[in-house]
Length: 593
Ligand code: ADP
Image (cartoon, rainbow, N blue to C red; front, side):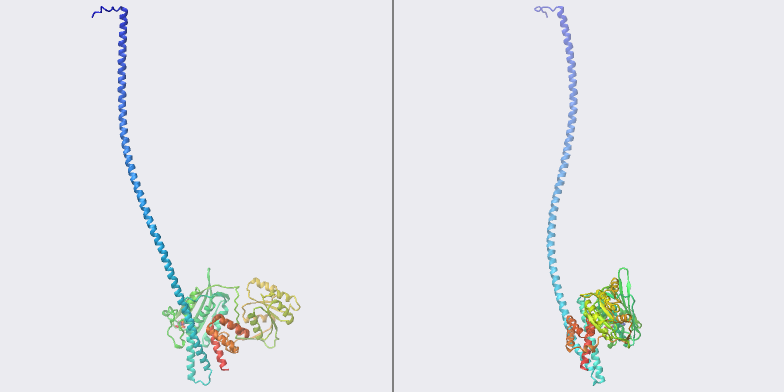
C-alpha cells in the first residue's frame, strides 16, 4: 500500500514506533504472563475451592448423619421417657389403689377389733358373773351344809355324854360323829378347791412369826402322833429366821395336811419334821420336809397323788378327802415354790417343800402367843412375891403380861404411858417394871431416865419390852438405864427366864408330857363365857362373817384376855373349824354340867 496521502515517518518516529512497538510487545507479554498467572491462580483457587467444597460436602454429610443419629437417639430417649412416665403413672395409680384397699382393710380391721373386743368383754362379763354366782353358790352351799353338819356333830357329842347309852348305840354315835367330821372336812376342801379353780385364791402375804407357827403346828400334831404310839422328831437349824413374809394360813394348812397324812399312813416308827434354809447367791429358799416310816407310795402312785380326789386304796376309817395334796400343790405353786415326794413302798415317804424365802427381820408382827401355856409356871415355895409394874399402852399386850404375872403369883399394877408409869413407881415401889418403848405422853426411855433419878430408882429392875430388834436401839435402851430387853412378840418362858435372872427368884415349871390338843383352846373356858357371847360367836362362825367373828373375839378378850388371845390367833389363821369344834364341846359341857 502506498501512503501517498500521508507523510512518510522519519527515523525518529520510526524508532519511536519501534520502541513503542517493543514496549507494546513487552507489555503484551507481561499481560499474557499476568493473565497466565492469574489463570493459574484462578485454577489453583478453584481447585482449592473444590477441595473445600468437597470437604464441606463431606462435613455436611457427616453432620447430616450425626443429626439423623441424634434425632434417632432423641426419639429413642423420648420414647423411653414417655414409657417411664407412663409406667410411673401406672404405678401411682396402682399404689393409690393399694392404699385405698389398705385403708378399707384397716377400717375393717378396726371394726373387727371393736367387734372382738366387745365379744371378749361380754364373754368376760358372762364368765365373771358365772364365777361370781358359782362362788356365792358354793359359799351358800357350804353354809347350808355346814349348819346341819354342826347340828349333827353337836348333838352326837351331846348324846355321847348320856350314861344310859348301850355299847352298840355308843358305837353308832361314834360312826355318826366320825362321818360327820369327815363330811365337814370334805366340804371345806371342796370349797378350797373350787376357789382355786375359780381363780379366787390369792396370796395374803404378811410378816409372820415362823417359829411360833411351827411351834403351834407341832403342838397340835404331837398329841395325835404320840397317841398313835409314833415318835415325833423336829429338826430345825438354830439360825432359822424368826419372822418371814408369806401367807401364814396357807403354809399352815399345807404343813398340817402333810403331817396328818404322815400320821395317817404310818402304822409304826416315827415322823420327822425338818426345816432348813437353802442359801443361793440370788435368793434363799425355805425347805420343809415331812418324813415318815409309813406304808410308802409306789412309783406309779407318786405322780398321781397330787391329782384331785386321787387316793390309794385304804381302810374306810383312814379315808380322807383326796384333796389335801392337790390343794397343797396349788398353794405351793401360788407361792412360787414346789412340792415333791420321794418314797419307797413299805419303807416310808418324804414330802419336800421348797419355797422362796423372804425374811422380815425388824418387822413387827402383832401376834402374841404363849408358847408354854399348857405348862403351869409358879414361884417356888418359900419365896416372897414381888411387885410388878407394867407400863404399856397397847391393851392386848398389857393384858397378856398382867395375866401371865398374876397367874404366876405376883402383885401387879398397870400404867398406860410413861408419865403414869413414873407416878405409879413412886406409889407402888415395884421390884420390876416391864417397860414398853413407844408410848404416848412419855416414852419408855424418858420414863426410865426419870425413875433412875428418883429415890429408890436405882434398885428397881427395868426391862424393856420392845418391838424393835435393831442393835442400835438396844444400845439406846441399855444406856437409858434398862437392865434387859425382851422382844415382842415374846414367849412366856422368856419373861420368866428374865425374871429369874433379874430378881434372883426361881420358878417351878410343870411341863406336861403331852400338851393339850389344839394348842391351848379350852372348851371349859369357852363354856364359862356369858351365854350371849357363846351364841353370837357360834352364829358368826356359821355365817363365816369374819368381821363379826373378830368383833366378838374382841369382846371375849375384854372378859377373858387369855382366851381372847387364843381365839384371836385361831381366827387370824382362819381355823374356824377348830373354833366351831371347841364351841361344840363347850355346849356339850354346859348341857351336861
Ligand atoms: P387324803 O389324805 O385326804 O386322802 P391327800 O391328797 O392328802 O388326800 O392324799 C392323797 C393320797 O396320797 C392319799 O389318799 C394316800 O393314798 C397318799 N398319801 C399321801 N400322803 C401319804 C404318806 N405320807 N404315805 C403314804 N401315802 C400317802
